[in-house]
Amino acid sequence: MGNEKDPKIVSRREILKLAGTAAAFCASFGFLHGNQTGKETVQAKHLQMKWRQAELKWYKGDELLHSTEFPARVLKHLQSDEMSVIEIKWFRNGKLEQSLARLAANR
Amino acid sequence: MAGPHEILGMSRVLEISTTEFLARYTDHGGTTLRTEEDGRCAFVTPSGCRVHPRRPLVCRLYPLGRTTDETGEERFTLFPRQSDCEAESGRDGTVGRFLESQGVGPYLEWSRRYGELYRRMIGLLDRLDAEGELDAPAEAGGTGPKEGPGRAHLSPWQDIDASLSEYCVAKGLTPPREIDESITLHIRAMEEWLNDLQSGLGLRNARDRF
Image (cartoon, rainbow over all chains, first blue to last red; front, top):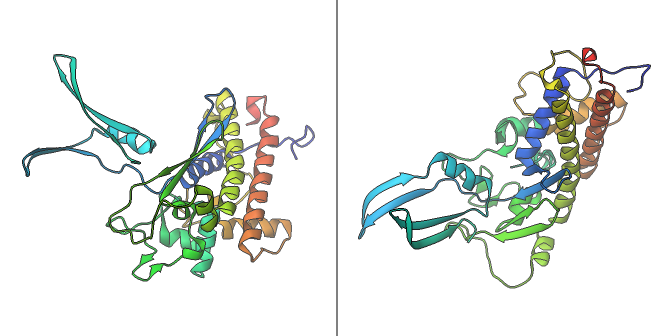
């Protein structure tokens, strides 16, 4: 199989199966692909808990004044990395006044 | 998340096939375990986990999470205790002893071996992408398990019973009964499938062959 006398043609169906299997393994094993070090690497994430939903809430005493979910783009970033952190900072006229909190999912 | 080897193990505890398990208990193309509407695991009952002897790796690790970086170095994190979790916990002992007590070793080894297959798959896809072959017209044919009616998985390889059944028929083998043997044969079948793909792609310098 696979020599010049018997040329093998890989079908589109097989390529779809290949892509589907890679996607399935990525999801079912928690594999990530990267080549940051210049060579092909596979990272694994075996995590039982992720950021699922994140909300910001404003209270006056015990009274909830307003609640809003994090933007989808931010939530996606949080869900992709269990080490993600959220920092809440107070700015005035573009100048940092105070760092209020630093929250991490795995703390 | 649940790999095909974990689905196999749980299906054996429940005494059903992996095909039935995938249909009844998984979502997202057969890659994650189905949960109840309130997010609870479908296998957790008041008397405990229904698949505990063959629970998946992430369940064995909990309350730890495990990641590896691009150099392969592994790192463990401790998740916060969930309010409704009745498990005993403490900070005595070591991570190593905890992993040993949970029977994590074989699962990490299988994860490593399936990870090698995943690395090869990504390599082949990268090569196809570089050659522009992912835009080529469709053709029939190929080896490995076929997608059958009613299979909604991302990959037919997720279904070990079905894929091994086809593989064993093609090779004149008797499907193994033991879980470990089945996983070993599943990995071998996938290696052969990837070998076939690799050798096929190795000949495709001319685009009109594709």
